[in-house]
Image (tube, rainbow, N blue to C red):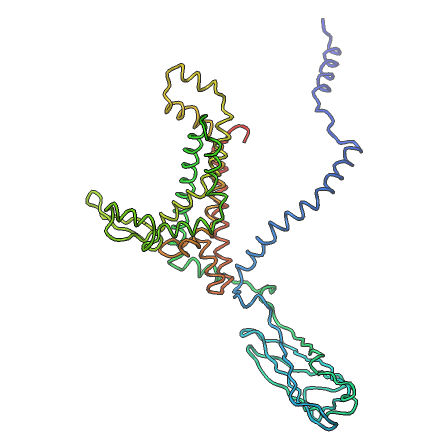
Length: 442
């Protein structure tokens, strides 16, 4: 019979045994951890600088009315000129300072000029704002309004010391100093860039085109990659050569392949148009990259097909399907052949094997590829710019960033559109990670 004391002792031992083990690191383990963090700290710092600094700079610029010319802060500029020749004592030279404010929008305060004259040149007259101390000239020029220009002239008399050792006054460059507000580093912010972006009717059209281009370009690349992987997952002669050939669109320079497509689809001398005309398919050439839409009738409905945009999407799918092909093929080859053999014994057709065995096994890698391709395609700029320049209804947000920032010289507006791109992709990534089923091991 168990007494009360024995039961208490047993319960105490059970409680003691149930306590979690002591996971506190020892001195050596803590030292190793600190050493590991110290060794990795430079890498973390470099990665954070590379990733975060451009992102934060883009956010900073998006809240400022920055033009392309504002990349250089307002500065006073001086150009020095010397007129006349010094051949004898008593000759006169004219020293000119051509001054200007480099900014057309911002003033510069407390502008000053300092320069040094060569020995033997004596100023005959000097501007009232300037002071001569030996051979040193200093001028207090006050505040310059935007776009300010003026000229200061100082007549000089040539002395014997200068003729003995002639040194051009231009050898000593004038030093200009001034205080101006740099719009890039100031703490004045505005929402005008975002207001201008969202209030423009074309912004929503461009956003819709971007989503259309991204979704269909990504889906097309994945479908083509899936078909190519299924084709090359079987053994046949020349399979290695064909695999390498399938990689050509992805490894070839984008300028070369884009130019090839432009030449092939040219409405006047393109090969495809020539074939269509010879076959009697079309009566007039088709401008694949220059025609916005083609109208046609289907079941009594008038529909419009976005020709230029669809051609660009076809190029996107063709150029980037090799990446999907490589990943999907690698995943296919890791699937056990016993599953296919068992399904074949049970009488499953090849289509049923693909649908019920291959696709479920490929769901994880396909979802990861869709995420990557969606982000990369949404940020794609060079393909569209090289093919159409954003014309004929193919203008995407990235092309809009370029046109706002460089074509229109409005860096603030371009940065604001880039911020919109960032948040759209951020929302997409969050939704993807929240609702997409995960494959074990990915």
